[in-house]
Amino acid sequence: MPDKMNDVRSNKTVLGESGAVLDNGLNISGARNVIVRNLTFRGWDDDAINVQGSTNVWLDHNTFDGGYDGALDIKRASDFVTVSWNRVQNHTKSMLLGHDDGHTADRGKLRVTYHHNWFDGSKERHPRVRFGDPVHVFNNYYYGADYGVASTMGAGVLVESNYFENVTRPTAVGYAESGPGDLVQRDNVFVGSGTPESAGDVAAIPYEYTRDAAAGVKASVTAGAGAGRITV
Image 1 (spheres, rainbow, N blue to C red):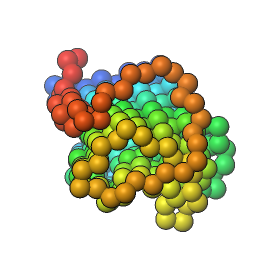
Image 2: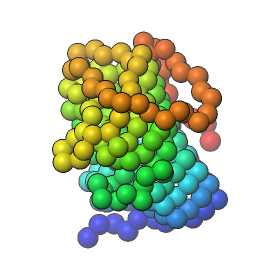
Image 3: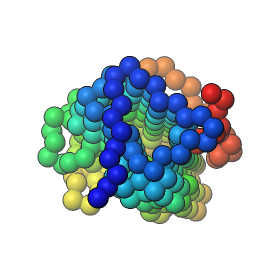
Image 4: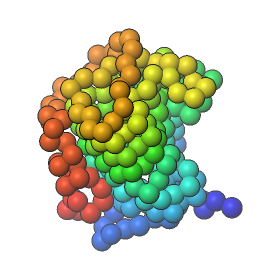
């Protein structure tokens, strides 16, 4: 049987100290104002972090190392989530956004930002997006993936200033049985990688932000992403 996941309630911060490692997951369900930082997840049986029906969530500087199912999945009308400075390694199913093609209640939700994450030999879902628009993916480092970012089921994904190295399909419009979404890619670096796919338009990003130049993303992300890189 899978290990029981730990529920995280609203207005809570889960902060790892002294190399904290979890072998089961965190379930953030129906919650608001949650922060998870500086944890290492290793060998989990279900998801390492499952976010569903939740808003205003920040997932920062965590390491996901070799588990069973999703490393960090966001679904069921979650909204306003930031995924930053995390590292995924020794794993396949990285980050799913929207769990089912038929869950149309996700339309107008799943507005998520992914920045400065290190996908270190993980194979897919960085993220795999359904319905969310806009989804903002910038300044991430991808190494050795089958695919990087997939936009499906009418999603709108902006992919900018990332560094893709040895990624077979850096960006994908449609994936598996899921119909296509929109994807705009710009100012990315591609090293030993395939041709990116793009289509359509994406809703405006609803906040101000500053991007790093893509050429420097590999160095900055590998130096700073993952647990143990911040002082708590």
